[in-house]
Image (cartoon, rainbow, N blue to C red; front, side, top):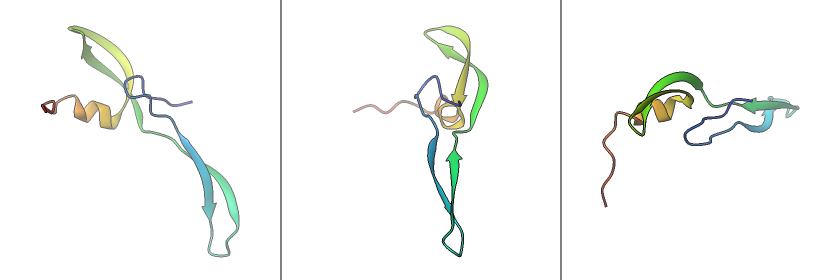
Length: 63
């Protein structure tokens, strides 16, 4: 099963509903890619969702 090692995002489940309201089971999986990231000062190969890969370059929010 696809899951992000950084944020823990996993797939969801539900139904595809056709025009005739016939329901079939479906899964919505996160877009998980293998990426090399810097974690605690070391380069580590992780399985991360694309949102986490993109957020890696974003400056952190200070409150």
